[in-house]
Length: 48
Image 1 (cartoon, helix red, strand yellow):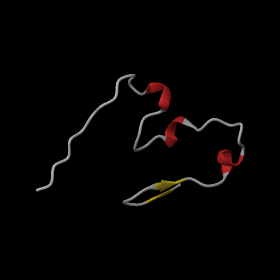
Image 2 (cartoon, helix red, strand yellow):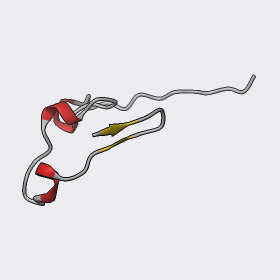
Image 3 (spheres, one colour):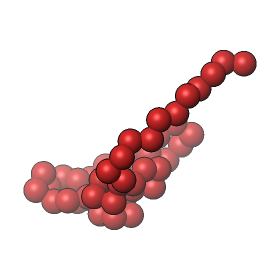
Image 4 (cartoon, helix red, strand yellow):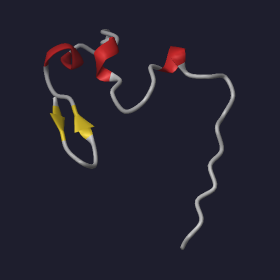
């Protein structure tokens, strides 16, 4: 795992197997899709 201010990249290991599911600890900046809420969250971002 290589993390910086903009993103986290994962390389090698379990990701080399296309049939393997991602490990739970890979979800650092987001939520595991099955644990995500069913309803969308809307944000309004205003300048200045």
